[in-house]
Length: 218
Length: 218
DNA sequence: AAATATTTTTAGCCTTGTCTAAAAATATAT
DNA sequence: ATATATTTTTAGACAAGGCTAAAAATATTT
Image (cartoon, rainbow over all chains, first blue to last red; front, side, top):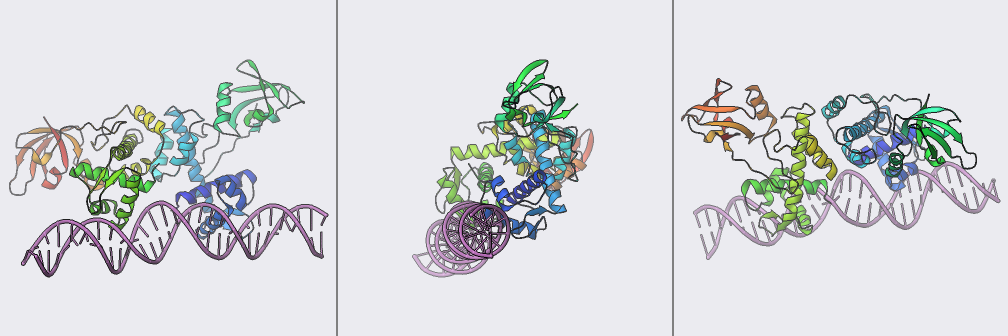
């Protein structure tokens, strides 16, 4: 069994490893968890004794197969709870993160399975991130940043890169939601801003926005 | 804000105070929380500094108004989650306690309110215990132990005194569920057992059972 | 009322998870 | 290749929450 703190470390390492594709540095973990590198050092030692990470001093940290399973099960719970909050309790997508951060630590296999079924076995959370299956498997969909589309290319919104409340609220205001189709009408060389069409309306989008919105090319 | 441990102490004191109607002893808390009296002593000091309990050395402990509110809100969450697990996730009433014990510590006022509404503002949990309202108020219903009914008296099952999994499973087996009507056909002086009618069928009930089942006289 | 029993508190220690400051290892630059 | 900078680890301290053993206070007997 893992403590709350251990679970948070596992999750952080899981995300960092997926993002970068390689071993994770003590410093990177410290930054992600808003703690100190020395604390991370201590914790990594404990985790490697529990055989959830592989660790060589001064080299990066990697999850073991077992560690990956634990971490994926936490992410699975987090994302299922997010779906629950949005679909059943009328939370908006910018309000769910902190609550899911707590709910993900509830220990009860039956609860997770029943919740999954109650929600209709969702494949993605409200931000478009995939929900790991029981064995930790992820089905990755082909997605591209809006900023990588060429003029006249078309795509469907499928996720966000930045899931801060600020960004999500901004998207709400512009009525950009997952599932909607976007056509790139124009790309400005000057500031890399885009002119897009969505819901039949023309909209101007800054590069910062386009760099944080994922679409599936169509 | 209160730690998990503090919340558990508050809840224990709340229940003990309701049960006995007076100040709670260090020993009683220790027994309830399966810890040592010395640990309780330490914690009580902290809690009284936070103004949630009133405490005089060697005298009993009592919750302050503020403390009662906090405790009631935890009990409220516990019981709402129990309803959720039974009504929405198909848990049976003997499986919910441990999970609710974890869920009751999730901090999010919006979550509690939305959950309450999603469940249709239930007044009682699956064991017949009342769910405190937002201000900590409890509407107590008039209930009596089955063992206190006289011959030929009738009542409706409304709650249990012992909510251990063993007892609840026993009731399931005998098909004794909340809401059903019971008629006392006979009382045996010899062993205080009862002969009752339920669902039109005759059933023999030991004193131990009759002492742990609440009915509302009708 | 004294003696005994019980309850409660205190004192000191342990573990977990964190921190700061300093030392050690590795990486980068000249 | 040596000096400098950065990263990582170690050492020592601290707070929370718990424990044991002993002391102090209160209750109960005789």
